[in-house]
Length: 73
Image (cartoon, rainbow, N blue to C red):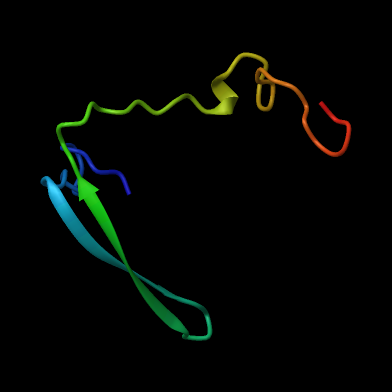
């Protein structure tokens, strides 16, 4: 869910928010779970990093070693 001044999902006010998510499968089984979110609008705005497709070298070409099974590095 994108929340912003420019969308129908306006920013939330500070404080504790409780929201419910309901999911139903194709057989009609339904489950509802509640979640708690604490909103603090005094925190600095976060920036979403670019996706892998926008990085030089294409997807999966980041810095770092291979890692893997035994003896892999």
